[in-house]
Image (cartoon, rainbow, N blue to C red; front, side, top):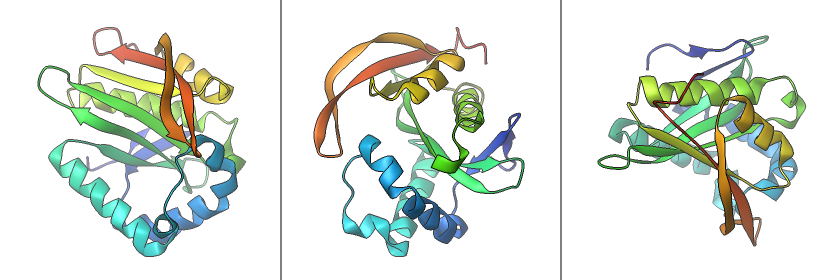
Length: 184
């Protein structure tokens, strides 16, 4: 992908090594905000070398077609404000990916996450030739549920004790959309 994908308020582009310092600063500013929704991370994750390693893994996943991590850019000022990713990409009979995203606390409520998620799903179907994208969200994360609903994903059920988040097994509402039903 050579050029960013543009939405109305956000654009997305592949995360790259040159983002490491800015991305780490963004993560550090949002550490407390994100911790109720994220797995417990090892201390190395919160270092520049840890983020460089994460970005290198992301680049390798991109090259293999097994994952696509994007920077979310606020179109109003060009700032990197979050991450959206298509992870756990499986080919062959499944042709599926898991959608995940997070946004800087100060940028919530402006449509950036919705724009970025919509662009990532469009990429999944138009560029990565996937058949299905799914997402899981904790029932208490109403803002994230609203993002998934706005971009046209359907609720498929509740997965009990689905992911280990912040040290506890959390239930997740499961959403999905297939290429043949995607209207975004």
